[in-house]
Structure formats: C-alpha cells, structure tokens
Length: 465
Image (cartoon, rainbow, N blue to C red; front, side, top):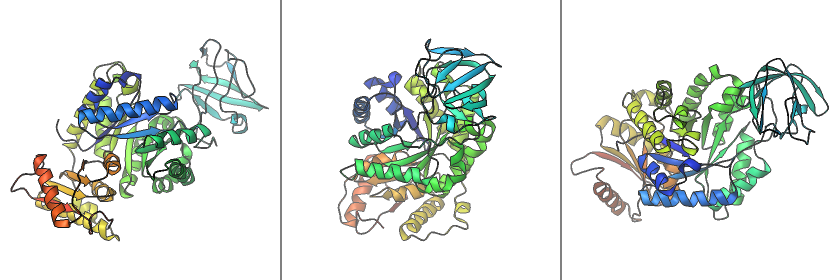
C-alpha cells in the first residue's frame, strides 16, 4: 500500500461490524473509526470499541476511536403511517403539545422549545433541507406553516431554521451519559455536535475530565454545523483540539453555495492554529449503492486533500452501504493521487511567522532542515505528540515518523496528516535512545545505511520541552 499523508475516518455500523471485514478495512487504510452515538445503546458502543481494538491488533495497525455525540434532537415526532407526503401549498402544523402520532395535517415535536424560537415569516427546513415550510403563525404550542417545497417526511426527521437561531444546548443529558461510556473504553477523540461557542467545548472537556477517572484525556473535535458557530469559529477552534467541517447541517442552515468557501477557510484556520481538521458529509455518497464513485465525488475528496485537510470522513458509506471496503480503497487511492499533485511552499509558510516556544522552534528547524537536505524521513520522539502536530501543520514531502512510548499518544496521532505514529520503548539516556530509535527505523525499512534523516527529542528524555 503506497504511503498516504491524508487520513481516513470511517463510521462503524451494521455494514462494517463483521470482525473480518473491519480488519480488511483497517488494512485498506482506515486510520480512525467513528462510533455514531445517535444509534445504539451504551453496551453496543462498548462492544464495538472492543471489536475495533481487536481488529486493529490483528491488522497490526493502531487506529483511533472517535465517539461522535448525538447532540440536541431538533426533530419532528413520529407518524401513524411512518411517513407522509407533503404537497406544495398545503398547510401543516408542528405541535409541541401533540401526543398522538402525526398525519397529513400535523405532527408532534421532539424539540419542545421550537414554538418559542420561531415567528411568522421564518423558513424551516426539514429532512436536510429537502422539504421547505414557511411559518404563518405561532399559537401557543402550535406552529402553523405552509409547505413551499414538498416531499416525503418520515419519523424523527431533523428541523433546521434557515440562517440559524435555534438555542438548543450542544450537550444534552444523553450526551453526558455517552461521554461516560466513551471514557470507559478510552475513546481517543470525542466529537461534539452543534457547538455554538467556546463554552460548549470547555464544558465537554470538563465532562470528559470528570468521567475519565484514570486521567485519560481525549482530543475534542468541534463539529461546525450551525450558522451561529461561524462568527465564533476562532474561539471554538482554540477551545478544541480540532474541528469537523460537517457539511450536512451547515449547508442546510447557511445554504449549499456558501459551504465550499467556508470549508477552505476552516481548513486554513485550523492549520494556522495548530489544530486538526476533518472534512465530512457525502464525500462518497453514491458508493452507498454503487461500486464506484462519481467524478464529482473524486474531485470533492481530492480538493479537500489539496486544501490541506488532515482527514476525510465516511459516514453512511461504511456504516450502512453495500461496499464499505471498496469505498475505503477508492478513497485511499484518490487521496494518494491528489497528494502527488501538491505544491510545497515550506519557506513561504515560515515567512512572517514567530515561534515563541523553544520546542516549537526546534520542531520547525528540523522541518526546514529536512526539507532543504531532501531527508528520507523526519523523526520526532514525542511524549505528548505536540512536536508531530506542529510539524504536520506544514505541507512537506518528507514523511514524519512520530516515536512514542505511550499508546494513547500513538492513537491520537493517527489523525495527524503526514504523521505515522510508532510505539517504541526507549532508554532514558539520550544517546542510547537515539541509537535504539535508529535501529527500530532500520528494522521497519524506513531508513537504511547512508540515508539522511532528521530527529528531534526533548531532554531529559520523556519530559516535555
């Protein structure tokens, strides 16, 4: 398998829960497995996490587990027939007080606060924007609307307000329970749905700290999917370890046409602030039912790679699709080909930059030297993974190998672009450790006698800085 810098996040679901298939998917290039907490019980997730760890062990590759929280359920209730077909021009009522099942005229709401958050003239988008309704009036708990764009509406479909403005808190009671579950199996990343500001992320971090009694610290990913999050992008980014460009809900709220430019801006901002970034939603959507992607999907994935994303994500494609393994293989191929066309401007990257931390300056110095000497590899001996993260924020042709003695650090680094994390137990003596690291790299076939490579480490060994 050719070396690939961009990482692949794949969602686990009924289509990919077979242990042998999951092992094949990891071998084919999955770096992070996403557990979607919108479906299944706590026990299901604990079982799936075990499945992932075992499959990774058999594949001889370390992968990270990402627990993706459901967030607030801003949804319609259920229908007596399971679904209805709304016609343009008809009236339709969303009723927070309704207890009976829905019909052609009205449906209940999972999100009881909606009547207090909308007014006449507001546009509501149902089922990912496929159905558009306009609010005529709000009377008590009932919202009277006219259907502008009709279609099939089934149980529990999502509701968005055009332009944003729904106040549901990012972390629900269910999310708090789910954080506990995720910490019980040491999830490497926790993705927070619908954060509006930095406070939502800080609260999630506190909840993770309280739930992880043994000091485990997961990376926090903010899913940018609300219109309200855009003005607060930088503060959310700084309160997180990374962001997800969650193009589904975001597109519904701000409009499809705005999203590509926002995606580029988010990727650039994340890299500038030393944070990771995942590009998600419908990347290989047609492969849910087809064995090959469309040309547009190939371009979409390639463009995200050329923008500098750390990872590209698969959702229903691997969770419920017909071709989970083939999708991963296709995505890996596209990423590799796109990386071959990248323009590397490392010197320009450093212009006008100031580095105030000694360890960061050393990391940048190693990167600069390796780039100009045409080194075979850059090796970062790291306890926390920070050195590897800083180096990975710059596009460079030289592969970065991160050597750590901590399994949690190794797993976290699986998401960093152009970083291959390796687990190695080295001596506390610096010269011995460097010799051990070199011997390990030679055994793995990464370097051979006569090769030039750059290596960084902290001193004393194992201490940060």
